[in-house]
Amino acid sequence: MSLQPEEPRSLAIDAEAAALAAEAEQQLREYLAGTRRAFDLTLDLSSGSAFQQATWRATCTVPFGLPVAYGEIAAQLGQPQAARAVGQALKRNPLLILVPCHRVVRMHGGLGGFRAGDAAKVWLLKHEGALLL
Image (cartoon, rainbow, N blue to C red):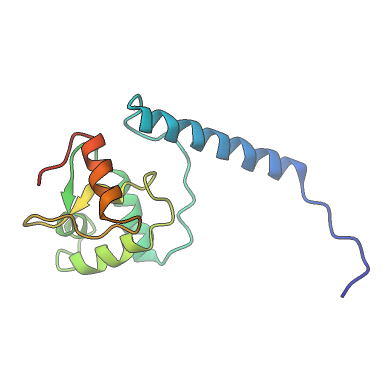
């Protein structure tokens, strides 16, 4: 145990983080209200492996309301046989909705997985007018 006072946190970093969180919250509210179709945020996706980061970046390019298959993301990454690996990377997506992994579905029908559960994935796809089941 140290009796030394803790180092003060940088107020500039706290203010920057608060502003980013407020902007993310606002954009999520707009998305959920149906007035926003794309997010305009700088996302830090550095917490994953190189493959995960590439998968998350590719997933960010999937347009609103237009689901794609896991294999399509794998092919976009230059690894067409890596559909399962894409699914595993999306399972670890740290920013659900902002990195729209709910738009990635099975090639021959079916939802595929979603960390927030099937009901949430169905709701999000319906919200975007994309449910093809």
